[in-house]
Image 1 (cartoon, rainbow, N blue to C red):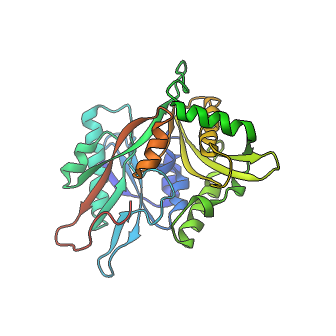
Image 2: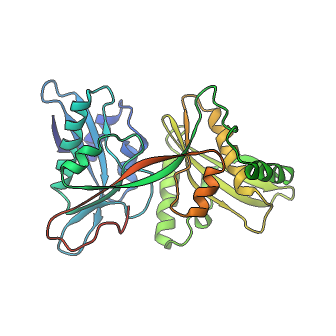
Length: 308
């Protein structure tokens, strides 16, 4: 296996026919201000074995770049590795991709996705892997997606359903300023720009709006579809509005996911805030772990963990 950095143009051509997740698509290279795009090929034949869009940020002055996201524009930032490869080959591909990235940065702080299994390769290069979690609902055919709803969730659904209707909305109308709370204007602007760029991928973005009988907007949900998973990227609701508004929005997003062919899971894009995690768990969503890859070059003073 041999990995090397490539231009954005070359990368776009390489992944055009590959089943990569959105965070390794050519669009991902446009969302982040700077990226390192790496392609791994077999030495014999040159077939693509793996790719990686690695977001770059500026580190301490004079110390070079770091691999991390300045703003969370996409849910994860792990490499894509051909799923048909033997586990030993997958490990080699992961190691090859990672080693190229480490040659260009002095720090890494990136979230791997729940399906990324090559954690051993991260440890082999001297990295640490922190355990994070998201919440996911099984949406495969035959599963009762509402079967795990708690009594509280069911009560909130009934209450909100009496006074609100949920309808599809143009992603351009999503209020990122209300959804991205406690962050800078620059962060809000970056999220909005990313969301609007993603809508150009056919079927990738859906927006839902909860409206009361007077036509007043009471909340919105922004859902990203990535191949077999629907991801709840953003949500906001009017705290002075009807009880159960966020619950109704999530349920509507789940129902909409059932209508999307090929989608078999709903990712709540978990939270470290206990109250939000309990809200997600109320839908019967199972906790699913994923790795947060941390690596720091010897002798550097900048702590890992500032972003991710």
